[in-house]
Length: 227
Ligand SMILES: C[S@@+](CC[C@H](N)C(=O)[O-])C[C@H]1O[C@@H](n2cnc3c(N)ncnc32)[C@H](O)[C@@H]1O
Image (cartoon, rainbow, N blue to C red):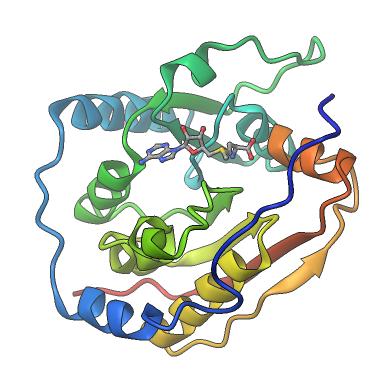
C-alpha cells in the first residue's frame, strides 16, 4: 500500500474566481462535441448487461479506475446494477483482488465518461446513484475547465438526477463542485470532511488515507431535469 502520496499543491487558494462565469456559460449552451463510435458501443454493451441482470436500479461509477469501487458498490447495493466507466484500458484490465464470492451485479467498460453521460441523458436512463470518486483534480488554476464541475458536460450530469456523490483529497475541488451544483440546480450542496466508516471504497481513497490526507465529499439528491 502506497503511504507517501503527495499532498496537492495549487496556485489556487480558494474557489476559482472564474468559476461562476464559466458555469453560467455552460448552463446557457449545449455541448455539441460528437460522441465517439467506441463510446456508443461501450454504452450499448453496458446497458445490455444491466438489462440482462433484471435489476431496475442503476448506479454509475464514473472514472472507476481499476473497478474496485464498482465491485464494492455492487456488494453494498445487491438490488442495483453498477456500471463502472473508465477511459483507461490499462487500469480496467488490472487484476482486482476480490474474495471468492464476487458480486455479479456490475460491469466495467472502457469509454469516455463525457460521452457516456450524454448517452444516458439521450436514452432517458436515470441512475439512482452516481459516484465521482477522486476525479483527476487538475489543480493548476488554468486547468479549471477540465474539472468535472466546470466542464461543458456538467449540466447533463446534473440533469440525470438521483443521489450524487463526489469525493476528493483536494478540498477546493469539492468546494467548487458544491458551488457549481448549487449555482446550476438551485439546490444547497456542501463540502464536508469525512472519514470512511468501513474500509476505503477505492484504491485512491486507500492510498490517501494511508498517506494522512484529509478527505472531502459533496453528496446530495437531485431531481431529474427534463429539457
Ligand atoms: C484519480 S483516478 C481515480 C480512480 C478511482 N475512482 C479511484 O478512486 O481509485 C481518476 C480516473 O478517472 C479516469 N478518467 C479521467 N477522465 C476520464 C474520462 N473522460 N472518461 C473516463 N474515465 C476518465 C482516469 O482514467 C482514472 O482512472
